Image (cartoon, rainbow, N blue to C red; front, side, top):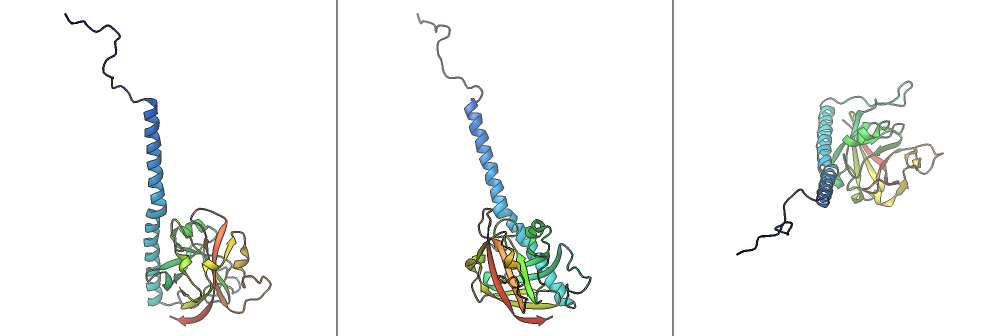
Length: 233
């Protein structure tokens, strides 16, 4: 006669609800996946969209300006405050960074985030392209419109071509990004003559600034140059 199993005796394991540890593991995995998707979008997906928008805006401006050139602007004239905030004032091309490298420059450092999400930002109060003084422009090296992602490739002697509704200005780099790093508070690089706060500008100059590091830091990489020629449209 076969003995029956006593009440309470152990048997095959039951498959009940997941343990608390399993829920914790699932929650952590979901959080890691969400973080990975966010990082992929921030560092890759958003830059593709910004690049496409930037190229489209730059190409549209170039076509419009070529078809109908305008008279040179003079923001120094009495009663003129300069371009309106958010206005597309120029297109910058840097052949060293690629044949397709072209970005719109927006007159917007009052709201720099919006401008830098879509292209480059002109420092209000600095000179306009081709004018005596310092034409100063900021750009990102990571996320959004990361125009200066490969800025460290720029070398002394390379050209920066700035197109406007009335002219095409060619600047030559004197100090590349790799040669000058400052703090974000070092505004002297934006002076009419960088490094010489009391000097009066005698020629058109250019200053380009960007974050030195991919992660947010206080370090800024800066490139300096001077105008070598201007051609009217």
